[in-house]
View (cartoon, rainbow, N blue to C red):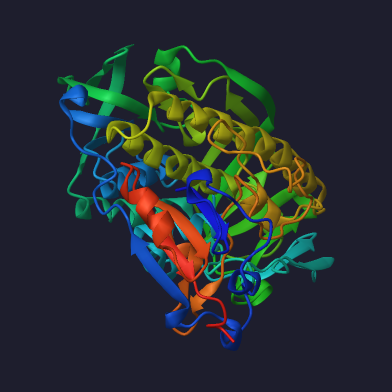
Length: 510
């Protein structure tokens, strides 16, 4: 949800004024407990307590939103829509999570979304223990040629969360486990989208079971989150833009490499002798190796043995050839249809940007759909999704191309992960420019009150683990640096827009 910082007693709440400086407590983000806001340092006024969405005759049908695809984007969107009171149906052609090698972690911004959903503890408990280092080796028979620390960019100063190393199949299982707790969300697995028609009143989707049984669902809106080979995108007639970077052979295997790589293992190993990359994926000694040059018919067990250069008794679990690309959809919205996650954009697994971007898509779109369905925002609000997330997707593709080339050569691109994760600013019709902030994006991340920026993190109660980030989720949020938040609260009470006003009391953190 959006936020605003309002300064001083003489502010004009109707103008939605913004400050170019942080209140004292926000400027102290990331410092130790003595410099944090105590429990008395924030006073909250809730001016609208109702749901963001109410079922309305204008949006009749089997559901308000149909989400196609139960990957990260689709499940996050469905969970958020359910929390916001939107009747949602989530469908996926698969009945279980794919164990094919894909992404292997998320960034801190994605963990913040999990925190909002109440899933962060479960995901952290399922994380893969790895050491924050990259090694370059010829084979395991020789010592490392180079060891490079990869954990230098901590998020502790700018977020209550950190990134999580976790295989995508484990990640998706943890996400899906929380779907039954959302009463407004119905899940239908094993159904594939085979037809889609739209008109200004909504969309009609045709779904087929594996046995050929056909179902029809009517909805106000459709979210296509069904992967890069998206049926939604194909049926909507939306083209893609971008390039294929090449092919990779991926071999999944199980082997105890502790005698050579230690425990926990490095997060990334480049094997120069075979031009391969080796990554741990699961705590039970499962690994995946990516081979750019070795695309021939060689037996995968022989390929793994030659790459490792030592006898490990490796058990091959799978072998697949896949295309690496940086591509995005020509449009993220077409009428009642929206694209999210890999259906809208795809990058290589390098850098763990794919899941994070997919979750951000669902996070951006869910509240806007709830606002329109709730009757307090016009349909044009939904156009800002394509503007905001499309710009981020294009930037992510450009960055991922650099990461791909660096991985091929064994180098590291000069990329500020905190900037990549949290530093982008949305610019659309709902973001009012402020001349006190330059238009150009900075090269490194600094917490900012600029319009369109992510709200800065500050500890409200460090001992209890409560952050300003925890104030956001179900409504618009105003952070007010004044002793009297009531005037702004009164403005919110006169509108249908859900608004929470939080007064940051100066001096409480002395």
